[in-house]
Amino acid sequence: MAQVKEKIMEVIVRSPGSSLDEIVLECPDLTWNQVFCEIDRMSRMGQVKLMLKGRGLYEVSCAAACNAPA
Image (cartoon, rainbow, N blue to C red; front, side, top):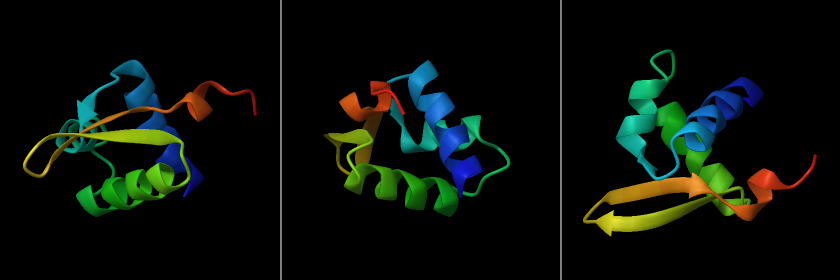
């Protein structure tokens, strides 16, 4: 699961404001479901922010916790 998170975070940090579908396209070795489930988990943990952009369309960006030292 850590690899999935790392791949997704690379995309989010590189391209803040990406949609879920854009992130899926940037991670061709992951399924849509893997990306969705991990973004959902990270959102609940406060690691990423989801902003509604339209009906069923969300923008994903890094939350302040992304920049906090580990």
